[in-house]
Amino acid sequence: MSGNLNVRLKPISPSTIRLEFRLRQQWLIALLLLIAGTAFGQIAPLIQNIAARHDTSLNGEWRVIVDPYDVGSIDYRAHPLKNNSAFYKNHKPQSPSELVEYDFDTSGMLSVPGDWNTQRDSLLFYEGAIWYRQLFDYSLSAGRRLFLHFGAANYLASVYLNGEELGRHEGGFTPFDFEITGRVKPTGNVLVVLVDNRRGKDKVPTDNTDWWNYGGITRPVTLVEVPETFIQDYRVQLASDSAQNIKGSVQLNGIRLQQKVTIRIPEAKLQQSVETDATGHAEFALPSNLTLWSPENPKLYKVEIASDTDQVSENIGFRSVQVRGQEILLNGKPVFLRGVSLHEESPLHPGRAWSSADARVLLTWAKELGCNFVRLAHYPHSDNMVRMADEMGVMVWEESPIYWTIEWENPITLQNAENQLREAMQRDSNRASVIIYSVANETPVSDARNRFLRTLIQQVHTADPTRLVSAALESHEAHQEGHATIQIDDPIAADLDVMGNNEYIGWYTHTPADADTTTWVSHYDKPLIMSEFGGDALFGYHGDPQTRWTEEYQANLYEHQIAMLKRISFLRGTSPWVLKDFRSPRRTLPRFEDFFNRKGLISDGGERKKAFFVLQKFYQELETEKTNAGAAAGH
Image (tube, rainbow, N blue to C red; front, side):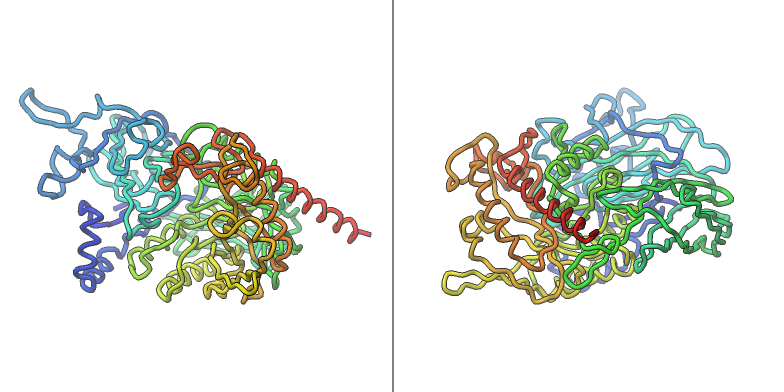
């Protein structure tokens, strides 16, 4: 059987699962571990570089049925529906007397990709199940295989083709595939996807977040046709300890797993052939003298990989990133990360960003601010975003949705987190822009949490030693004679390559001026990125610098913050919160918030606030200092 099977004991509701977990914890954990042996495994492995394949888009208008009571999947006794009453059957009455209480053909439509919340006013706050249906024809030649690829669907996606379940995927921000070679018909295929974005304590992220829970098929859906034996995955990057040597791997999928594979970089006049083993795997190494990728020169090379049965190409940049003491080194030279955080909200239309156009505008705004770096919070953003960062020369912090208070002792939650991290890392393994993987944001210290995060940190270090690992931590404050000392003493920092820290002096604590007398110390000889700081301002609301919600207050806060940041000797980057105002159900204050987090340097309408120019000036000064230092070193 081919497909992607994730078992979550559906159709039992999340609340019931949690109740069962608490009442019968020991035996349920054992049962779930047994059932979930492949719950987060990819039976249809992820295919690298979908854009370079023979692909057919299924994007567009899909028929949908809103199903808040799950009537399309369970009966009134909460038993799974297997008959024609199940919505995935797409059944039509066979006689005038047959009762069928759903009809995709006369139901409304939603655009895919896209969140449902901003496509209909009635769905703005909706959390629950919606069924999607798309019809398509496809003639597949003999000796070819066909996969159904989803860029992402939030949060739990159950996928059905022609009345049969392909499988399920959990996680709202990572890609997944199903093989449909033996299931697709030349005409009249019915694809049904049940998407459920209900939050839960055992999920990743958990039930309490500070961003909009956009539901739906939020990234592209694609049919991908490949040869019978094809290049399923590959990695081509500099070795972790070298700025000259390329180290990579290739993985075949199919019936002819032992083949010759040739790797070429024509512009650099590099070529090497290797033989895959009985599992279809091969590793290779190439000495090189490449122009290295950097924000100043985001050089990309066309890399070609060809086997006896398949070939694929991709534009890839090559760079090294390392830590030495308190320094972050890009291509062997110290770099300061002039950054900003951003959520995946579109600057061009309401709702979730997903397109290359969305990515280009957001990164153009960041570069206008003076950034060479962005923190993509608090989950993996779209493939288009990191590819655009490669092209535009912007370094990236990519983050897993381990946010606030996860169920640290739940083994299924950990398995879920590991899978989402694995999928993000595999998708972006060839992106030069991605220099940091973050495994958490603002998580409370405990033994269980430390074990959970150390598992993820080890996962990154083992799977991808060419990138750094961080987490957005919290810190402790001590006072003495009117002077504040903030200590970075989170024990998980010992396992990280780079420390991140979120602080809100002047907004959630103290006043902006208190930053002037604040000192920062660290228990670890490591570089620090101040991964969040800032405060809210409503664009166009003005007053004196002591009045909250005004642009003047936010600008004043940034001025004091910058003065403080300059005094932190081990600071090597900043990503203040946040580039653009974004929606959040937690932000209820009328007039000023109206369900938006207003900490953006740019409003949700695209207008620059006063603080934008304060930070821009700081970043321009840093760039000038770097240029002058480089000129001096040249003499």
